[in-house]
Image (cartoon, one colour):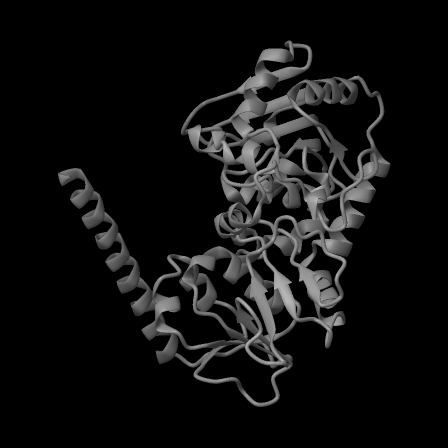
Length: 376
């Protein structure tokens, strides 16, 4: 019982610290004159749920990149409880906080469903909805927020023509959080820990080199291999992350903590890497095996696919071009928002992959049978 009270006190204390920091950020934001780079079409967001956190920031950021002016309806609970994403939102260009929708707004977005005939709803009900309805838009999964916030996304094109010194690459956390049973039970996929463990067990030295120096920063651009280079639990400076990926032909993109998607698959395709993944059907439109990705099913099949790749003598330039083509058409922020706008005025709902919120919705809706994207 005492332990529960201690944990409760710790959570309350953390919440108070977050609220205090975000309140100070909000005061500083309102005290300074907000100077943007110019007024674009106005998008008005009416959002109250702070659990969206990074995915609210990313949605706002996509509209900013596409040239829109963003107006967010004032909601103190939202702004105080977005953790560090409150700061990122307040740093957006052409961003305003208003009490009501401004006149002449181009689009009105609200969570969870449209509040009137002219507004568009935002929902985390994402998995199991493959798209195709003209009144719905499936928001693609993005790169990591800091890639956009830092402006690194603007340099993507500079990395696509780099010479590739690593045939197959993986880098990422493999701690126990990534052994989440939800990956198998809800999505019928293999979790990250099982993938990396089986690769280590099933591939011999001809195909695999493992580097695992926990807590140390490593510059992977110093490595060269025609097999699989796997970094486990290594700290990678974000500044070098894109450069890291662009040094590789293929990148293994296993699931994140609570869903098959992880930011690294989008980042890999952006710089012209060919993703190796078990969930091509979850993209909209789906990725195609042998065209713009390497698809596998289960760890044994993954090892077989890697052996095939390593034994190739020539780089897969065509597949790299197709991965870039897919990114530019379906994942690049400007292209994404352009397609969203094209759906107006029929558009009524935007489905956003909000990770744990989307998983919760999936658990509520899925049948007793194992879920798959073809069930709907």
